[in-house]
Length: 250
Ligand code: HEC
Ligand code: HEC
Image (cartoon, rainbow, N blue to C red; front, side, top):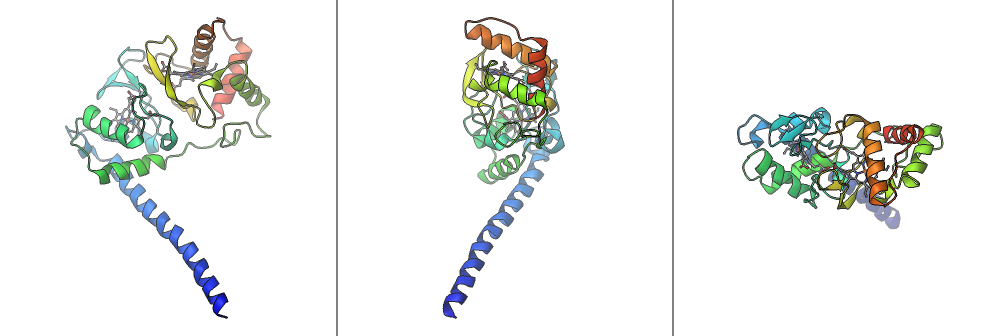
């Protein structure tokens, strides 16, 4: 009888501890969401994180220098990335200079938003909230970025090109579809390899937003990679269409 009691007690603890941890996480995430929408984080009190990353941390699809919106393709402008999936990037910021999420967010508050130095609690809550933003899954690829059995043929062909002849996955490494090292694709400097989850919704593309559509971005990347590999060439229209079908499924 005693052993049964101990076993039940043990199971009770095993269940209770993750429940408490989950409740604490939920509280921290809710606090982070509040801060994310709080304009007081900025020096002038006019901008919150959600100003540029609206719709649950997604992107406003604009390019910025500091807090100013600039035209697509302006050399010093930076395209606003989505924060969906930003909990697990290999590196942060287009320049690839921020190895960790907390350091990156601190830099944004102090440098871009001209706000006061954030407390560790504020940073912790913002990290918890941003890390909770997962990209929605299309059902056409699994969590590792591979097509599911029921995915359309174009998605499967696109994946084969992505991991094969297109050489895309050498930099956009599965499952994060990014990597920690920056690369010079002769597009104006060395930049991080951006993750491609939810990429269909994050136009304009490339660090300065010079490319308005995904087919153009795919063609640009294909040509940049083939030139870099010493084998210049352009993709066929069918290859672009299949790669775009795959990227649209992410
Ligand atoms: C004025 C618009 C603006 C505001 C306000 C803003 N961001 Fe951003 N955010 C950007 C832009 C533009 C970039 C890309 C900058 C770069 O990499 O040089 C970026 C990049 C990021 C990244 C890096 C993502 C990646 O994949 O590398 C994170 C994380 C982030 N922002 C979170 C936040 C948080 C949290 C706040 C509020 C404290 C915030 N941002 C406020 C525009 C903004
Ligand atoms: C040698 C590394 C490398 C290879 C190979 C590569 N990429 Fe990229 N990719 C990058 C870098 C670096 C950037 C950012 C460049 C910039 O913004 O100037 C990028 C950006 C992109 C973007 C824009 C994403 C955004 O959010 O703006 C897309 C789309 C993309 N790549 C798709 C592909 C496809 C498709 C292939 C294969 C045909 C490919 N890439 C091959 C390094 C690579």
